[in-house]
Image: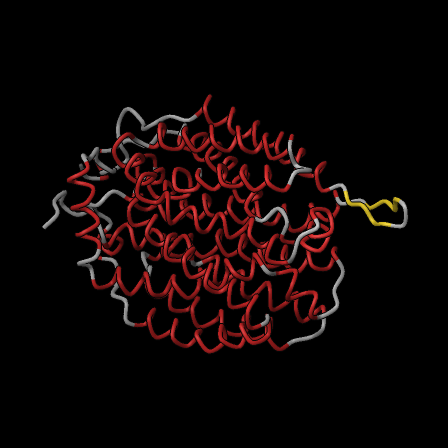
Length: 417
C-alpha cells in the first residue's frame, strides 16, 4: 500500500509513549548497579565480577532468548510480544525488590528481567512500522531509543542519590535492598500501563508493516538478511560500537574509580554520556528523515565518536571526562536509531524485529567479550583496544550503500527473493 493511500492516527503517540516507559524501566533494571558497584559489592559481599554479572546476565540472555522473542513478535504481533515482556518486567522487577537482600534471588530475578529484552527492544522498529509512515520512522525509532537512554540516565544519576550508608558495629552498611524495591514498584507500574494502552496496529496502516509468519517464513527471513551485503557490514559496525557502549555502561564505575571519582561523579559521567545520547537521538534522526539520508549520518557519527572514546581513555580530569562522555554518547547513541531503521529498510520485507534483534544480539555478544577483557586486562588496556577499533568502524560505515527506500520514500515490493 502506498503512503498516499494510508492514514496516520494520533493514537500512535500513545502507543509509542507506553512502549517507551516500559523500555526505559527495562534499561533501569539492566544497569541498576553500574554507578554504585562498590556499594553493591560491599552489600552482597562479592567481587567486581559478581556485580558486573548482573549486566552480563542481560547480555547473555538476549543471545539465548533472541530467536523465541523475535519469532513471537513477528508471528503474533507487538501487542502479544511486548505484552509478554511487560509481564516479565513487572513480575521479576517486583521479586528483585522484595528479595533484594538475597544475592541469589536477585540474580534469579535478573534472569527473568533479562528474558524480557527481545520481546521489547527487538520490537522498536516493528512498532514504528505499524504505526508511523516511512518519513517518520527514524524519528519514532529515535524516540523509542531515547527511552533506552532515559532509563540508563535515570539509573546513572538518580541511583547514587538513593544510596545511603550507616555505620553498624564499625561496618558500613548500604541500603541497596531499598533501592531495588523502589525500582520494583516502578517496574510493576510500567507493565500495567503497557498492558492497558498498547494496541497492535491502527485500523488503516500508515504504510506496509510486518507480516505474520510461520516458522518456515521466519527462518527464510533470517536467511534473506544474511544475503544482504550491507546488513553484514552493519552487523560488524554494531559489533564494535554497541559492544563498546555496552561494556562502558557496565564498567563505568571501574573507569571512574581509576580517576579517583566519587559515587556522585561516577553517576554524572555515565549520565552525561546518556544525556548526549538523548540529545543525539532527537536531533540526528530528525535530520535523517528530513533529508532522506541514512548512510551519511552513520558515517559522520562513526568519525565523530573517535574523540569521545579517545577522551574517555586518555583524559584524567573530571571536566574532560564529562565532555568526552557527552561526545561519545551524542554520536554513538544518537546514530543508533538511524542504523536500526536503515537495517530494517535494507532487509525489507523481512519483519523489522528480525533485523533489529540481530543488531542488538551482535552488540550484546561483543559487549560480553569487552566486559571480560576489562576484568582480565584492566580498564585502561581495554580502552586502548576500543580506540584502535574506532577507525575500523569508520571504514565499515563508509562502505555502506544508501537505503533505496528512504531515497524514494516508498516501500519496496513485498517479496523475498
